[in-house]
View 1 (cartoon, rainbow, N blue to C red):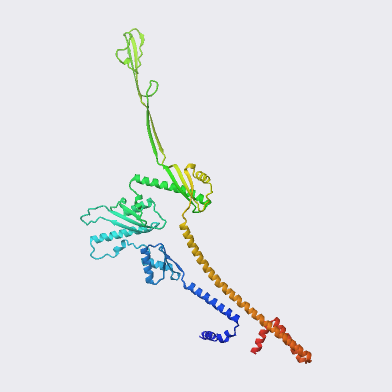
View 2: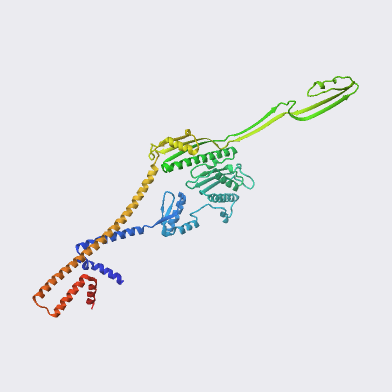
Length: 518
């Protein structure tokens, strides 16, 4: 209390004890220093009183953000929101601990309820009530499972289960399901992932075929259309996927190479790749005639006959006249002969050929269109050189590459740059304000030191002038009358004191202070 009382008394006596004794320059320095200190203190108070907001959670939709804001208002926590669904709170409220608390309260995280709803079974529940509760539990459990997939923020599932009792089933016995997916920004699901979600829902619901599951995302796109049970449709989808990947490959390859030359965002590449999906299967059979000297012998029959006491002549009948028989009559003696008969059966000469040519996925044609920003790239650039470079890079012909200059729309980029410039100007203004305050403080301090030094120098000059006048008066008095030894010693002592005060003022001031204390 005594310290506070002393400060209060000092301020009360300041005008009488100090202010009236100040010179005009001292008053100006004092007022400038006081104003600078006051401005700096006010700036520090404003900066320190503005809390440092940090991110609590981001990427919320309106319903989720409303639940979090309501919980924060109930707990008395200040907050700030953005259009992107982000919520900021002061760092002094421990965002990590508050986030965990909101999770335990069920405000954050998945609010779907699964089979835990059966932990509190109401009394007097009918079979229909149990069926509805089971359907709600099944929907909540599936929503949790789908939400755990990477890229999905939330999921909503609606099951259309036929109404039935223990005795009769409803007229419509087809079970259906609809799935609503909330995708994260920049995330897209491939047909394989969509089909996996459909299979997951169908496997968990009794009597549900995955073809009766419809999947929609938060951008109103029907994702289940990309999945079909028809094999031909599935093959067509895979064809489009392969073509899309091929076009993206050539687009990325050409764009990345040209952006290294002309700069990022100044090149647009459009690729159109024509793929071949032909499968040629050819079968042919060739039959060649059989001759007496060639062919595959299938069977052969040989007959021999010998007669005695007969005349020479050909055998009776038509066998000797029908080919391919070979008859020979050998006369051994009068009245004797021998006959041989050979029958050969040949297989037909057949040649079978099966040719299969699979050309699926082969590139038939490449068409590349390159657009350059005319506002950033000089139109004097030779188009033919660029066409040649692109054609050689992708192994295409010059006729399949087109290069042209167009003025790109830079409105979004200009808006972003203007926002960055405004932010930079604000930051620069804050820095200049702080620098200006520091400069004023430094100049005030420098002015005070300069004035103090001038005042000290003026006082020294006054002391020297007084000394000179005193020495002149003393010498004049000495010249008029002769001094005694005591007076001479006093004069010498005074000269010594003046000399010490001039050369060692600090020690003289200390000595005078000690004398005054004594």
